[in-house]
Image 1 (cartoon, one colour):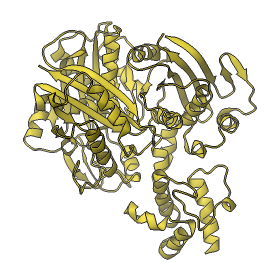
Image 2: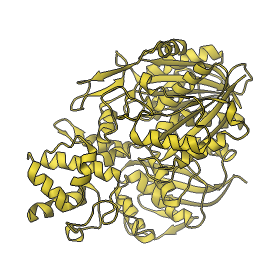
Image 3: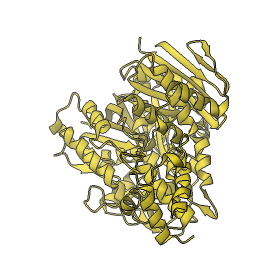
Image 4: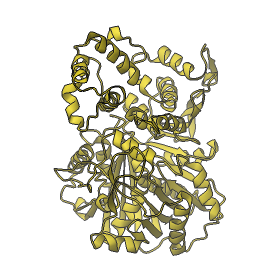
Length: 85
Length: 173
Length: 316
């Protein structure tokens, strides 16, 4: 799980263009939206695409993303349970 | 029509009110250098496409001198550089359309980025034209209708290291 | 003010403004479900021409009819061509604009207005300003977009498309439908009986590049501007954007209420034509002219980049 979290942090940094950030700067349990990383609605859509591209998970309902994208850890847990690649 | 300040950014140089600004980088990296020097605390910059980065940073330097009421820009190639980047995300056999790239497939997004940064709730317009001088009559006609000064000019990007911005602060009198 | 000398619509519902009007009055819709129109793209509902169209040819055909009705000489030096489009001819915007002007023998540099979904209204505002500033006597405003894999995939990545006919301003609205059309209006300094364009306004929300302001700020400011000099009770129709996305319609409702226009009948045309993007502002203005026949109406639009636009038209 910890390995997946680290990998995911790198993928998030790349997908969302956090140019001046390293995986160490992201707290796995901090909120991704609002406080914390301060992501917005386009970032959320980009994360949905990341799940599809990297892990073969198709999220049809963007509203379902709310719980999944709470933190990097909740995202990693969802990936572990649902990944197809 | 009266121009109070102007800036020109090319892949190799930055000229503000006729004076060359010392820079060490070129091309796309020049825009990042300018961001680090003049802004530094607006990470949304890194999410922008090259056209938006160009217009954003040119506006940033100019609007520090004087605020404006509207943003009227033009170019020849619309959002072609970013359009091509988006196309790469929908290739056959590797179809993962990127919303973060798709949102920049309109040239007027740069005017929106400038408006957000500087809280400009006046007019923002983008025109695609054959040549730079075609923008002049449009700006002239706009100035008869919106409060001045406005930020107006050419904002062109055909590739990541091929761009040219010539922005001015323009008054009606 | 500027005067309407002629107009035309070509859409999947028919060729000619009158035919399109009759189709809408008869309750016909151009919307259909497409399951394998473009590779990889998920099923989507849209209003698309039965035969693939050439962008320039489509613009030329629709402009031809409007120019003939207007009776102007399109080759004259005091005529300008203004094209409203978002993606033009396969991502190229200025080359097709030049080809269209050249087809009509017009030597002036054409203008492409690229202000996202508001382009069609902004193009008419640009026409008004150029004419009133004395730079041109007539403006041929053409709005057109053709649906491509590029556009549909992008809107799907935004989760903005519905696979059912859209339901603007309904509680159970589920997203927008895209559409294809080419519409044209000839605006002129020459006084003429019929519709006049009296006022126009463009404002940015300065809030977000893809989502509308929650308080409809930019759109409210546009409405406030175009309401200057008229009584609210004289506004007979409000041509809304009505994309049927959750956020657009909610924001529009707030802007309409803030402007005190909540009792004015609205017209939302996307269930018939889909969201025709660059054509929307021109096509929907022409449809409002026909739906109202005389009186005063406002046509409004909002789009990516946080931009909003509104125009006020009158016919005595």
